[in-house]
Amino acid sequence: MSANRDVRLRYGFLLSTLSLSLTGCGRAPSFDILGSFFPAWLVCFVVAILLTVLSRELLRRYVEIVWPIVTYPSLTALFAFGLWLTLFR
Image 1 (cartoon, rainbow, N blue to C red):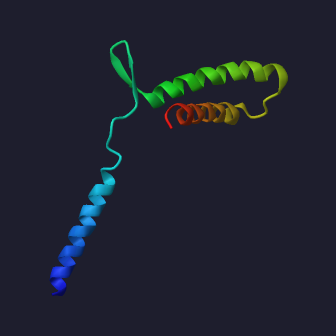
Image 2 (image 1 turned 45 degrees about the vertical axis):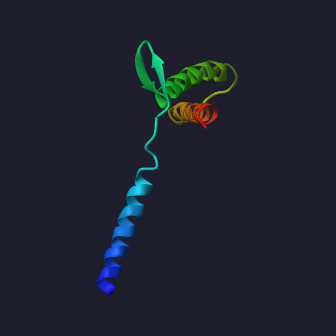
Image 3 (image 1 turned 135 degrees about the horizontal axis):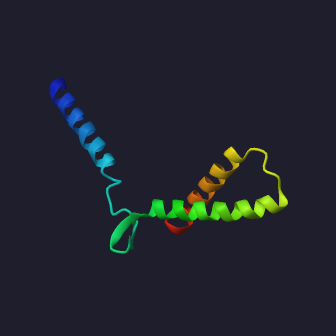
């Protein structure tokens, strides 16, 4: 009787694991640019880089950046994540 129960538990565990792993399978957000599909995160990243360059020019006028190697990648990440959450919530 316990062997039958063990088989059912293993089968249930396998089935639940497979169903949880397939929940993310869906259509990924993408853009059609000149006939080629680009993922949305790539578009957000490119726009974030452009916003970082723009903010660099504005910050350079008013603030002296002490650690630019930390500041600019952090700004890029902030813009990319903000765009992603705003546009593809």
